[in-house]
Amino acid sequence: MSTLRINVILFGIGNVGSTLINQVIESQKFFLEKRNIDLRFPIITNSTLAFFEKEGVKNQWEANFAQSAIPFRIEDIIDYVQEQNLENLIAVDATASSEIIKSYIPLIQNGFNIVAANKKANTLHLDFYNELRRNLKNFDKTFLYETNVGAGLPVVQTIKDLHFSGEKITKIRGVFSGSLSYIFNRFSSEQTPFSKILIDAEKNGYTEPDSREDLSGNDVARKLLILAREIEQKFEFSDIKIATLLLLELNEKHSKAQYAINKTLFDKPFNIAKITQAENHVLRYVGELDVITQKLEVKLVSVPKSTALGQLKGADNLIEIYTKSYGEIPIVVQGAGAGKEVTARGVLTDILKITDKIKIKETVFQ
Ligand SMILES: NC(=O)c1ccc[n+]([C@@H]2O[C@H](COP(=O)([O-])OP(=O)(O)OC[C@H]3O[C@@H](n4cnc5c(N)ncnc54)[C@H](OP(=O)(O)O)[C@@H]3O)[C@@H](O)[C@H]2O)c1
Image 1: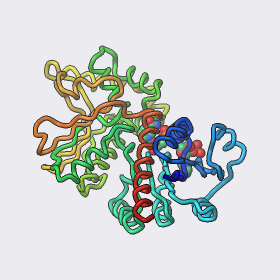
Image 2 (image 1 turned 30 degrees about the vertical axis):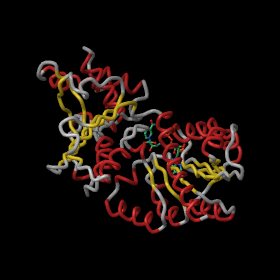
Image 3 (image 1 turned 60 degrees about the vertical axis):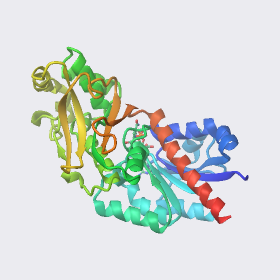
């Protein structure tokens, strides 16, 4: 059987993108021997520069990028792959950019499959969401984004498989944020003030550069919306009821400097929430989709310590999937919901799934 060459065009060489390149370089021999696949990166980019390399990146890719990358437009990328007759194309979006998603449809129309760690394309208005899927169907291309929720954990695919097997999903509930998992797991088990734990979370790199993005609840809401749409629930972001953790005195309307010096204002309200709970209960910040009542909520809840959510530790994510067949006991997916290694591995898994599809098509049309 001949080796299948796959051309990955990588947008974004930050934490996730650069780890992905290194994971592929490390496993290149393994993929060749075990799967007959030659995974190449003929183009890698950051926000302004692209590095074009006929042979694909190798160990010294960072030095090569620094030396030879040039400004680019998306049209240059499309022209290049056409000139070089590159086939089996997968564009990987390892950015958090709102700009790059405007290129998804032109890329699909020019022969690219897409793998995204970036959540933006799945959380915009439903018109764009549907238009993207219409193009995928028309051009027979695949778009995978397992890392949009729970990083490398198998959440999106599990939910999709259940739904398309005819299983009735009744509720999805979970802790979708590593930073807020860390904060509330510690806050519930220690006598440490909320503000101190928040500062620790920032120092450990668990939060976004401005932790108000985490505390706003918007990121949890985006992940919930992605899962809801996965089971064909036609919600918009504005349908989600978000109980933000931000206080009026500490919200995004105030400067970052004011926010930094006033974090102790969080201590009193969160302490009240903690001490007014029932015995043996802990606080968790969850996203919840109730399919029966058609409610999407992001909120702080108090749960018994003995439950799966109550036992959560570290910065783990935990997603409960309730279905008709599984009844009262949900399917639970738990583990690290962030981190460059697990996220890049999740992106790589999506790339390999598309590769398998390409292989099947090649066999059929040979
Ligand atoms: N890190 C995690 O644990 C994790 C987990 C799950 C999902 N994700 C998602 O993965 C994505 C990447 O995260 P990250 O941590 O790797 O981010 P990052 O370290 O900030 O890297 C982002 C990369 O994207 C590039 N970029 C920005 N705009 C671009 C554009 N328009 N075209 C091409 N490249 C562009 C940046 O280039 P410049 O340097 O030039 O700006 C940079 O190389 C995000 O959407 C994030 O939400 C991350």
